[in-house]
Length: 312
Ligand SMILES: [Zn+2]
Image 1 (cartoon, rainbow, N blue to C red):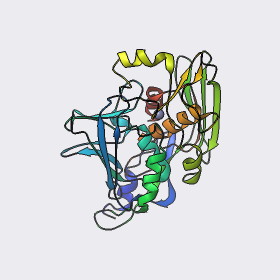
Image 2 (cartoon, rainbow, N blue to C red):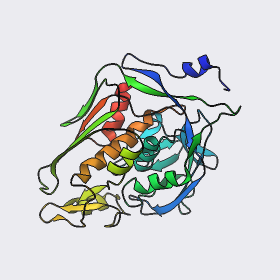
Image 3 (cartoon, helix red, strand yellow):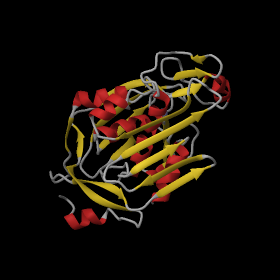
Image 4 (cartoon, protein in one colour):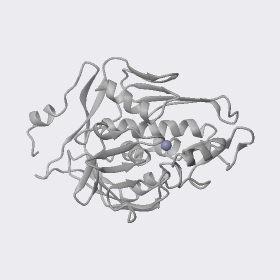
């Protein structure tokens, strides 16, 4: 290792609320590079994402020429309906689905370049693709993973944050609460009483990485309420939204573009978003998702970030 073992472990400061522990796995990175092009959900602009291998301890990092922003809670900027990272005027929007796929498939270290020829390199958005994380997972599996090495050719162990006491964050009637547990368990609830086709849904599962996520969570697409589309467009949002990249549900008429991939697909998508947002707790190639039973009800990106800040 470049760092001595004690110097490496000194980077992981536990608090009264959680402890960094070894997962007894080595940090991984991609075995090759990924490139995908598509439209941004909110900007409506076409961009290309290039994901490359990164050294052990480097973590996940967005970059563009000389600018970069680590995929970390330290750089989350409040933004409506998506998660945005921002540093020194470099802003990357809608990072949550890509980060969810990277976290769940164990891509601990990678460099992510988002190229939007219109926007220069200052303000970019990760393409929405089909609205799920399925295409990212397929692309990651397509190139495969390998053990990440640091500058001296050594591997590093993968740490994870284990909860030591209950932690909660709430806003109005929305909340995220997490309890200590020996494994990651997620329970997500949503409630749309005015949209009967969605209504109240719960999805609860132990997140066994790899195949479970790929099969049961990654294919879940983002969704919106038909009657709210015009209001969101007038706020400059979802300019790139279409029936090809989001499920749309009308309060009166039900699903506009079925079939769904799962009966409770909207709720599973909330689990996908939660994993992506909580992955921002990662540091130096660690796992981001806290090890515990995490219960989220009517939560969104801002509350997920608020929860991580409570944990810190
Ligand atoms: Zn989402």
